[in-house]
Structures are given as C-alpha cells and as structure tokens.
Length: 309
Image 1 (cartoon, one colour):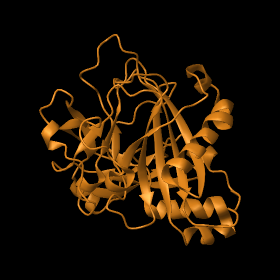
Image 2 (image 1 turned 135 degrees about the vertical axis):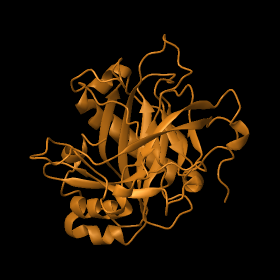
Image 3 (image 1 turned 90 degrees about the vertical axis):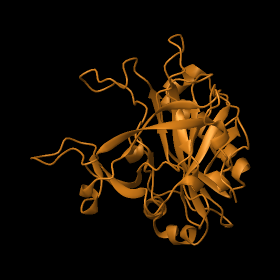
Image 4 (image 1 turned 180 degrees about the vertical axis):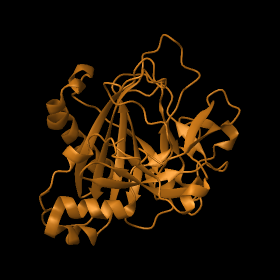
C-alpha cells in the first residue's frame, strides 16, 4: 500500500512551513531511556532527561489529494455529531455521561469494532501567552508540542491487564488497538492545530525510541520521535467540531501503519482575530475479538491517566 503523496503539496498554498520539536539524536540515549517525571523529584534527580531539537517541516493539507485511512496511514477523519455544545465541555460529568458514550458508538461504527472502552480524556485550552512561559503553571492543559506516540504496544498490553484483571488474557488473544480521538471545542480551528505523521513515512527502527512518563504511583511508556526528512506530516485546516481526527497509538497486529506520531504546532497562517485553540482528546481501546460478553473493567485507570499529556 502506498503512503499519502504529500510531495506535490510542498509548495502549495495549502501547506504550512513551520517548526516541530523532536527528541534529539543524542549520545545520552544510547545508555539512558528518555523519561519525564510528573512530580517534583527529590535530591538532584533532573525532572526530565529529554533533549529536544527543533526542525523546519512542511505540513500538508489533509483535504488535498487522497483521503488518509487508519490502516494505510495511521490516521483518518471521522465525521461525528454530538449533543454537546461548547459550554458543556467545562462539565466533567457531562463529558463522561454524554460525550464518551457518543464517542464509543461512533468508533464502533467507524472501525467495525466489537467493544470500545474510552480510558481517559483531556480538555486543552491554550493560554494566550503559550508557548511563552508565564513564570507559573498554566491553569489548564496546553498543546503538546513534542512529537510523540502516546503508548507502546507493550504498555497497551499492561493497561489491559490492569483494567481487566484475570479476564485480560482472553482479550489479549484477540486483535486490539489504542485509538486517539481529537476534536476542537469550537471551529473552524487553525490555532495550534494537530499535526499527524503518515505512519508509512516513519522509520520505526531508527526514528522511534520508548520513553517513560513517571507519576508518583504509576508510570506509562510512550514513544519519542526523532526527526527524519522522509517523514510526511499533515493537518486539517479549518477543522470543524464535527470533523474528528482519529489516529493509532498502538496495534496488537502487524500493520503497515502501526502508529501515527503527532504534535501540536504554531500555525503561521493564523490571524490575530482567531480564537486560541480549545480541544478535547481521548484515548480508547478498540477490541475486535468476538466474545459472547465482554468482561467489566475492574480497575478504572482514568484517575491515573487524566493528567497525562
């Protein structure tokens, strides 16, 4: 299968020339695993050993050319209506009671899954000064500007074991994926949009490295991404609230598109009149194995994962 042909759009008015941040190709990572502590460490331990590099990249318009698919490119656009209005996303209970069930149903239909479990969600509201620091912690989650993949396959297996306990072994026998779901709270959105990398343009052997996000009582493993000029990046200009980006973080089966690296980016085409980005991103397990009945979740990991970026 062929990757999206983005080369013809490199000089097109619809593409964006901007910067993305990547994990540096540093000698340190030959002996140390990248990590980031999400709590103040004791002693002299650094908060993180991640070293970033900034590269100029061309980010192409998803609307131009062949439509991407989850299985061919690692991401696609899903059309989804919601009963939620903008103000409702300030209410965590409404998100859980209304939006997440809507999302589960939409994913089941879009991907022909047998069962969907949404692990967590995060609402991000860009501060007017971001990415410049205000000198104190932002009150809301901000765009994540470092290219990454949220989970490794190994971490996905561990999360299934945590969530389903003794019943996990049955689920692990079948096909499953971790899918990210990303949509703006209001549109059309162009401010700090999400860039997605065509999975078939990624050299997983040389450009990807596992890293740890460490909390006080929990840790998760993600994938850090190093820059390669062969990578092809895309975004959805003028994204509306009914245009939902879905993309892979992990796939239990061998795939030409195992995962799609992603990052938020400064869009130089945005005018001062446009409102700062506000968005919601969710992570869900999609299971494809046929079972008479799916087991219940025995450990709700939302409480642990809800602050993970």
